[in-house]
Length: 636
Image 1 (cartoon, rainbow, N blue to C red):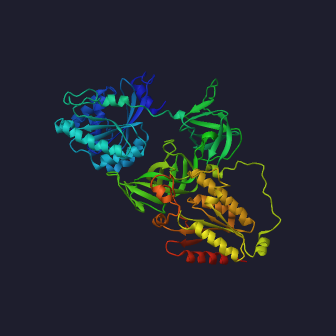
Image 2 (cartoon, rainbow, N blue to C red):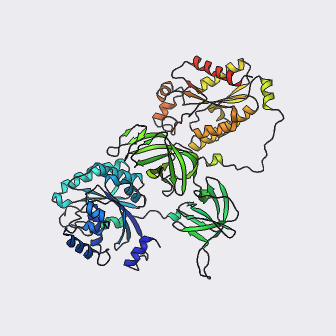
Image 3 (cartoon, helix red, strand yellow):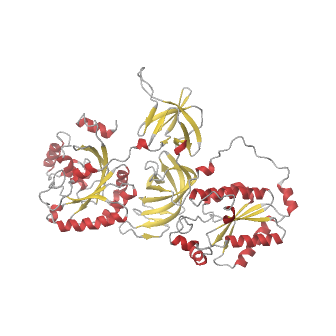
């Protein structure tokens, strides 16, 4: 039984029977009356434990301070003394319709980390705005953070209506302004409700002071919300917490975040891609007549054994084979930064994703988002309390999900030194799931050794074999240079051949489209073919955008030391002006989706073997540089 349900059961032993539990986060600007509203909500629904109201009232009398409904919730002495909520508080209450866990999150700017923690655990949100002060910057920031954390059910309470004489006009102005803001970030507030928490207006009963308002009160609004889809109906996600050895058994322990697991299921461990079947679900009990479970599901902490002894370590993500997580070493994130030191491009942090930890580097700050007006700006840094879209790269494969597919494994935090510095949600927009590219499916294969050594081929040809991998944006001049280089090298006696993107898609890769996964597979195949050319003693000249570093790294691995990465450099504006195939025009018009440089990313090489800047040099100058490079590096 969860802690929330234990608390409920202590109030009412029958509370759990056939009743939903909804988790709601309460957020709002400091001093907008959030704690007062929640305290009043508990009081007016009769959800307080016996004697709680009386004890708080007596305490106020002893201290000589006026009674506040906020004191019913603010349990910490520091909160009473400072007058602000400084930590998330979880309190359980009930209505006639269902049971609730209310997560009260601090509104003060200094404690936004706690607010994010609360939002991450909730099914819905109640956002408080002061009727006298109106919509503040913090109100917009809170709305954006709810959107960031995936909270889509939002009710807005315009509080302290008694302070503006219950004027309908003031309420309508606030309602119109905030609805427009939330709509701009794809959040639709289900209700906007005028309330007075101090006086009890529209909390648990309709207000006689605001007859012009015909909508539901707070309790009815909350009762109309729906719990999130049950986690057990989602794909299995079981992060490995630890591995224990008992007798001859190796027990893999952890908490199932989503889905179901049965004895006999075939599991895959990501990112290692090892597989095994569930031998048993372990139990710890002194009862001799206890029957071990054969099925467990989301929310349960369990231990399992496997039908074979494979090496598994903390951080692996267990799933079923047919619905495995994404494997990647790069992803996009919408991130909220909390640390005093700004997030910087090129700086390394520790990524925590479930039980998995790995060093990562900020590859790019794609844009800074101003939560007050949703404008974008560019920067190499993300300052404290800013929201940004960033690209993060790891030094090893990660197993994860997009946040929209699984909120449990689609969230992460970044740690700087020993402190949580920021957190966010994962998007793979523009990037490929690399699982299929790194998982070998063929078995019983032995590589054939050739009888002709590479040095003998080089002596016969007069040059070493190699791969000249031309990468760059569409319109940078890759194909033009590749064809011209092939002609020049042929004239000089080189065995050279161009592998061009359009040409290979007529045959070898005719079955591939232009999704991130298909693009990655396209480059994987070409990399392997180019590697074969290189081992045959020829020079393979490739002309591919190949936008992802990970794909180019795989091509380098296929060719070994013979791989030479050549960055054909030209900025997007120059490529737009050239636009030899009219592709940029179509991409800007929305006719081509996922177009590199416009709606899909291009990752410039970190350390290219040669950079050819076609925006600054003529084709003749670029070609001369390429020929000289080949002569220096390949001629025997």
